[in-house]
Image (cartoon, rainbow, N blue to C red; front, side, top):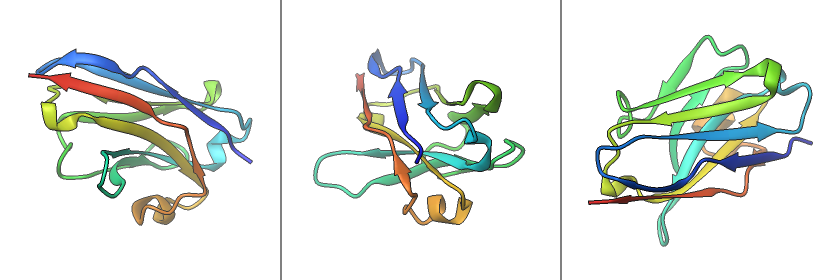
Length: 123
């Protein structure tokens, strides 16, 4: 079982930056690929980014490519999402997720989810 806890959300003006963190309970966090998703009311959860176990390869949705950067620190059991050039349409609840399979992250069916953190971008 992997428990994930996000932090770092908040209120930011358009053009600003935030860094989200994801703390994993599992000491073998390095055995899991991890990713970030977001969701707004009435919409499906949207894949944003994923990173493989060792951190050497990443994937991004077109909507955030060039603005968001996913990273991880396996020694600290932490994952991160650096978000730059934020736009009002980035307003959502952001979730981190983990799975032993990167594929499951890419098809939005990871085995483990965090509880979410709210990001609000004002114009």
